[in-house]
Amino acid sequence: MNAVIRSTGLWTPDETISNDELVDCYNTYVARFNEAHAGEIENGTTEPKNPSSSAFIEKASGIKSRYTVNKSGCLDVDRMRPLLPRRSDDELCLMAEAGVAAAREALAVADRDPSEIDAVICAATTMERTYPCIAIEIQNELGIDGFAYDMSVACSSGTFGIISAVNMIATGQAKSVLLVTPEITTPQLNFRDRDSHFIFGDVAVAMLIEAEDVAGDGNGWSIIGTRMMTKFSNTIRSNLGYLNASHDPEPAFEERYFSQEGRRVFKEVCPMVAALILEELGKLDLGPENMKRLWLHQANINMNMMVARKVYGRDFTEEEAPVVLDEFANIAGAGSLVAFHRHHEGIAAGEKGVICSFGAGYSAGTVFVEKR
Ligand code: CO8
Image (cartoon, rainbow, N blue to C red; front, side, top):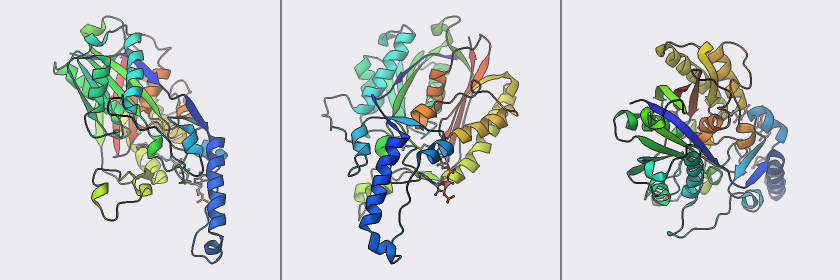
């Protein structure tokens, strides 16, 4: 049975941080650090820290702002990480709360009741806890029967999640799957690291994926081809894990944060992704001229421009490769799904596009769709 993207939903936190606000805080931290270490800097035993700049951030990444689950903690120079109240085991956890809100919108758009859903997948870069699965908590909160599980492939979590739903539908395990991708990334971001303090934001996106016969004629997007690709690389890494507490000395918190060799990622990933899209187009007997829209992963504007130019083999319009990272920053596994959520209008029945992720792992995923 073929699968259809029937509807989508989005949740954003109430608060945002602009580049200027972020840079203000970072530069205050830098000034304090350099002043506190003036002696060591003077005698050459400590490197001075350099200030950050909004102009650099926008030019190098395309990011103008990001949503955050807590602004005051991130911008408190004595803290520089979100401050979140600890929830009791009886309260909905943060990822589930965000995921449920996005899921409710996806269900409402398709006019579906939770009783019509067979499975929930929570696909995200990092899970708030190890168990019980966040997906099962979301399933319980929405009142869905059937089954649920978590999965994680960093920035390809969302597309690999769609493909898992497609496979469930193809094998008859489910007819209607709710994919939820809550990416609460700011607590994993080192706001004291000049190279990466601007990169990430928080969001949750949901997608309802149904068997063709459930979706009904003319509704949604047929999924006409999928591909998953992974290739091991240490260039994007977080060592946050359950063994941390077993190591002596326990790794400093900074060692567990996201880190990357951004320039190398850029150079290695762009050609890989463009080649993957073109190869898959060939398998589907299609060409770039058939791609009305590329909903690309949202890590960096320059990466997206390079990938889109390689795929189209020409200059392209904003409509052909829409950008949401100016508003959201990098939202990890949710990026290409949020691009689709925000920019799926204006496409006629029979026209096609691709939702494509790429990121840590390395991992890349393509989901080719045709408007029904
Ligand atoms: N302000 C001012 N100047 C700066 C700053 C700053 N904040 N940072 C660096 N500079 C300076 C550097 O010092 C350097 O100066 P110089 O030339 O004098 O040495 C100059 O700017 C250029 O530095 P870079 O070469 O590093 O700058 P780039 O143009 O490469 O831009 C980027 C940096 C934006 C990081 C870019 O390399 C990039 O986006 N690369 C790709 C990144 C990417 O796609 N990564 C994927 C990560 S996401 C993912 O896979 C999911 C992981 C899971 C996420 C979990 C949540 C935390």
